[in-house]
Each structure stands twice: as structure tokens, then as C-alpha cells.
Image (cartoon, rainbow over all chains, first blue to last red; front, side):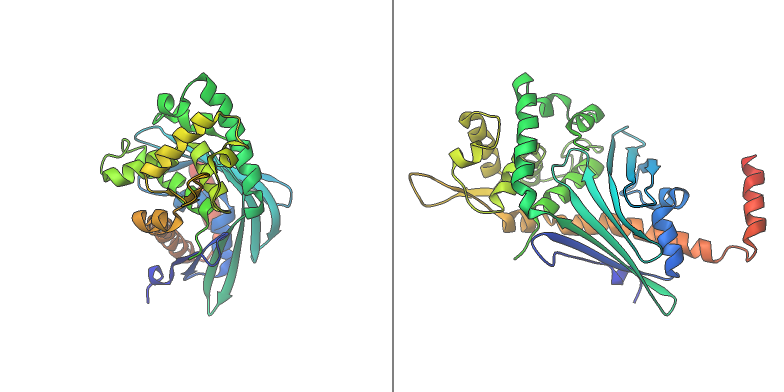
Length: 169
Length: 151
């Protein structure tokens, strides 16, 4: 079985997306690769053509982190960020996350479990359903204002400025 | 079938940002996919879907939390309906709207797209971890070398 075959994306409940993946490395290294900018910038990139241009990490509870990516061909840029809730090297990291242009906060829990010098990474994204109403309210009001000026989405999309304008981070 | 609607709209959002927009809007996508993308590109419409995830609602109920007129909300609902993301209930008076979450998930295979993006990341991470483990045993020398290059 290759490591790729171990990769699973599941939705265990209507509030969660969970990803698991095995790596051939001790968890200390896998943990470092998730928390050290010089390492993160080498793999946390998404589809071809993207580079990570901002990687401010949060290494203790209460700190804020901010990641941004840029498409080298088109110049599109977007980011994500939040607050560190738990930081227990090399076991576990819990962060809140708000993605630019996306209403709602999610709680991201990453755990690193080592066995036989392999590490199982588990990344769980929990979406707060009780906040749905608040989120709807918030994004609706923000957008209501924008809509009164014009249909900003259509005017600005697909330019990079459009992405920044929607930002709620 | 449990689908995290906020999670799903997030997945769509990410895919839209990282794949569709840089390539030119909807270049290779089917018209159905285009309709879904267009419907989900708007934050109000995503918020409406999130609201409908907690149960069906009438147009009046949907309009209430938004600082928008009922006709403006109806316009958004029409876009969502055309994309097949919502449907109307039987009650002729209220005509409640409900989410077609299964349609959203099935028609577009979002989790699979998401999986592919992350698998690309993790294959790069495999290579990086491999490299980190096959580096020369003496990290101090390695560090000095690195500093020398940077200087």
C-alpha cells in the first residue's frame, strides 16, 4: 500500500470533514513540516501554479496565524487565518480558521500519531452549526451594503481585487 | 447522508479560488458546473444555503436576517434553483425552499476535487520528509553550509 492509498477524506457528521494520511517519517518531522514556515512553503501549495507568499505561524495559544497564496501566472491571491487554541508539539494543534471570502469559522484539529516509525496525520475540520444563523446574518448584512452600491461580485470577479473585497478574515 | 454544508461551500470556494478563477472562469467546466459555481460565488447565496441546511424556510423567513428586500432575496433564490441547489416544498401558500444537499455533493464531486488538491500537497510532503531524513547525519555542518550560502 502506498502512502497515497492511505489518504481518506470523510464526512463523519454533518458538521465535520476529516482527512487522514500516513507518512513514512517520525511525527516530530511531520509536525515540523506543519509548523515551520521554511518547510510549509515547500509543500502546502494547492494545485500547480500556486506559491505560498505569507506564512506567519502561531506557535502558542492565543497567537494569530495568517497564510496567503498567490497564483504565479494570474496574480490571484487569497489567504486564510485564525487563532491558535492548542499547541502541543509534536502531538496536536488546534486552530480556528476563517478563509477569505467564506462566511463562518471552522475549528481545525490536527493530530500526529506515530507507530513503527510512520506517522498518521489526522486533520479534522469542525463547522459550528449553531453559528449558521449568525453567519448568515453577518454575511448577509455585509453583502447587503455592497449590493446597494452594485453587484460587486460581477464587476470585480474574476480579478484578484474581487477576492480581497470579499474578505471577512 | 450527512454533508457539512459549510464545509462543502468552503471546499467549493477553495476550488473556485485555486482552480477555476486562475484558469479563466469556467473554461473547461460543463454548463451545469458553471451554474453551480456562479450560484456559490456569492456570499449571500452561500449564507442562504447554510440557513437552509438547518431546515426548510419560506422566502419571508429567508429574507428576515438579511438587510435586503424580498425581491432581492427572490432573485438569489432563482439562481440557486436554476443550479439545482434548492427546490420548493409542496405548501402552495408558503412555498418553502429546501436544500438539495445531495445534488450539490453528487453532481459535482466536491470532496473528490478537494481530496485531489490535498493529495498533491501530501505527495510533495512525502518527498520533503524523505529528503529531510536522508540528509547528512551531522546537522550542524548542514546548518553552517546553509548559512554560508545565505551570507
